[in-house]
Length: 339
Image (cartoon, rainbow, N blue to C red; front, side):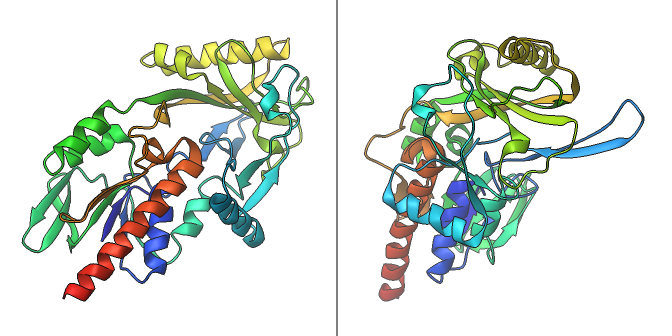
């Protein structure tokens, strides 16, 4: 079977199915796994003409836990060393709910969680699947008019709903309509390296007002490199602000977010390098279909999972994927017994 999408939902679904003995092939349009569990490589030339390179986590700030099942997954990652606890020092005035919060951070970078989940699973990168075609031999995946791999008996979509909708349309129009209307909040994100001098002593801020939703000191996170004289920052804008300015130029957005950071610090910031990234589909605004944590059509061998169904955050994506994987395993057993 094929899974389209290699973020938390797709990777965890693939692992569960592979561990059950099912053959799985994962496709993703990116060059590697992670989805919104993302880390960006940044390279630039400093004022002295020296090449500089660093990596900043511009995706999900961290994994938090609400339920026991996901807690067991987190503990497993900690035992094997690809997840670590982070107890950030909060800036004054940050949301009180974060006062005793623990964030679980992938090590050495955000995509490591999905790399571990996909260990041993067949993967195809830089492949944007744009059509699902049913043939007598099974589902044929296509990208830019070319067939990708052999036909498969089942296809599972682990994509943002707006990206899943056109693939679903010819086969489950009801799902497609629902996915197309599922609201996902955008997020403008700034990644930057600034001078260490004048940096605050806190490592995470959640301002009560203004464009900034999160500002974290990236090089204070577990397993990240610290460079003398540098402070590495990642800022996530509020969903409403990001939506309002979604089509603004990256240059304008960067200027606005840097100004907001300077206001938060109370002084100008000496940036050495910075850039911004627009997450068009960052977080679900609400559950797309309350009570339905996944979609599965056993008659067609077609399924969907993701945080827009299972709940916001990595935990919601993981729970949705586990539920879909269980349904697919029951279907596969029934198909084998019928044969």
